Length: 523
Ligand SMILES: [Zn+2]
Ligand SMILES: [Zn+2]
Ligand SMILES: [Zn+2]
Image 1 (cartoon, helix red, strand yellow):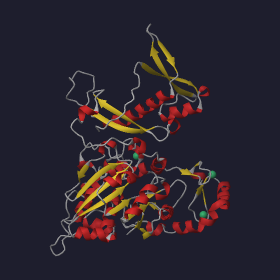
Image 2: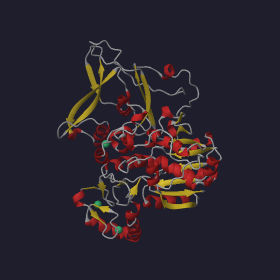
Image 3: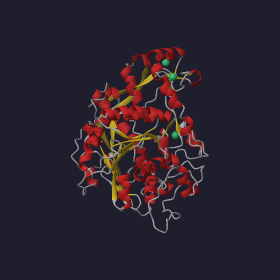
Image 4: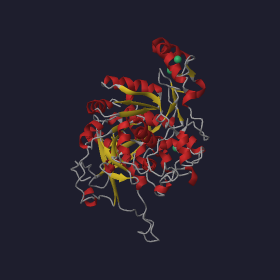
């Protein structure tokens, strides 16, 4: 981070005061602002109010209302501090034993904070840098690096769908399909024919039926009927995560290792920046030694003494190969790397041929999120290659944190992962040309920002594979692909390496699993 970064300084001669005022004196916009700051309401009816105090020459404090600009900075600083504070590491050696002052390891980190909607000026983000000791600059820390480029803040889209999808999946409340009201489980009404859609009342159900549902109910019913086929019965751990925290808890892996990305408890950490206090060996936190794949090659797979990449057809084969018990939930996280591996070796003939010739395959991996914290799991791709070829995975997306963008890490000797922050259509020209493009759980139908990427995929004519969580999202995705002029050459097919863990939508009951269905274009 040495690029020119425009810094706007907030004058620091004034102080902030928070007082509690009656609900009735607050404007609704102020209440929303207070809630976005996560300031607590006092009692039933009192809201915190923020004032700016200035010390006059006579030494008294005078208070005034903050300007919108000041509120925006306050929000950004608090949000940034909340995100980065947990990354500070205490330095026990630095302080004298009797001292009560806490010393920290030198620290400097920058996060991009999105303004809350009601305070947003267009689509902008603001970069907040937190450092210890205070006031330390980037130039001091990274004076020698010159390769990094300034972040293009203005080009990062404000894509609320991404955030919504994630947080809702984690909380899992039920929501009426029609009026969007939150629904109590006891009052829940489902469509009697398809049972796929959730309503708050019979009234909403009837109205929705008349307006649109009656035309699609048959199709939904057919999608619902695949429940049996899609459930993976071979596993013996609980495969239903209606409430992710509870599910993780029941397996003894809640808030541990890589599993921290499976619920929203750690969502305050930007993707890719989950701290790993116990070191990489702790990534599979909470599981016994024999329950996860070790970062070591396969020994029991030699065909006539010649090494060759391992072809896998499903989880049972993989679990047997790694001698994992079927009580182990690792398939839930390994679904991402193994789906990538399956596409490379079983679905894409060209990349399979390259691997057989011991060449390097370049794979563009679009829109990584939680995967950015799962590098230990991606190392398994290298072991499965089993002495054949090399893979360079370039993960591109707006969720790649600024300070990891441009970095390369070797995860095992055969897999390199490069991280690039930005939109695919903006960055692709600067990247090594891909042999194959992959976007997992991409929710094509939801994202307006997919357009540019799809046009690019269309013009490059490179095979691209997508996964979706449910058949409905595939259906929407197909329409988006078609309208971008792409033809689906690998039809929607259940992915043998989908996660076995059932996830639940807010307004629908469709069988949904991470990476459930595969489809491809230009294949
Ligand atoms: Zn309703
Ligand atoms: Zn129905
Ligand atoms: Zn949790």
